[in-house]
Image (cartoon, rainbow, N blue to C red; front, side, top):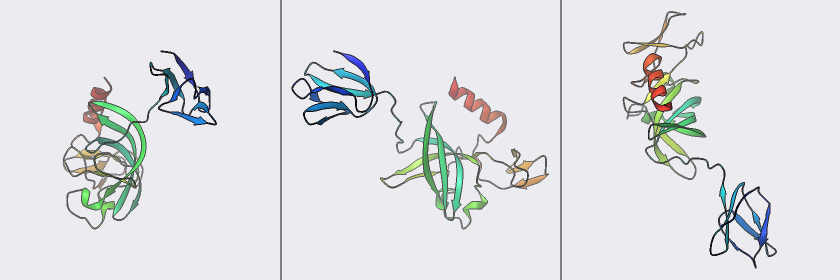
Length: 194
């Protein structure tokens, strides 16, 4: 079995020499790579290219960590930064949606009261379709894990059931996760990274 690095468009051989496999296309009887990766010629003379870097795919039930980027009632747009899978943080880059009915398990009129732009949230994937991906933060372990004061933009501390800004002496409302902020969040992230 031969193995070489190839780039998209690299010539591999002719159809007389090889069969086109994964990530290989034919043009006028010649075979070319359609992605960057390792070229493999297997025993049946099939030329395949194994991509160097494969983007992870979200699955139903995956836990995600992301930043709220937009609120268009009743929809909240979240930019996912990580997938939390099997105790590991996997970098990810995709926008998902959080509907107002998936904050507490019932519809709320003003979702923007419980989640604000720039909040970091942890949620669970509840829908994957060709046009959208939805998440939920209904469970106690899901919700806002880090929030900033709407006035001075300093991190908020969780005190009892509310969030408090030590700089402005303001209290704000969010749907927080059990692991909100501070030492508990840092401990959880450290456990994941180890």
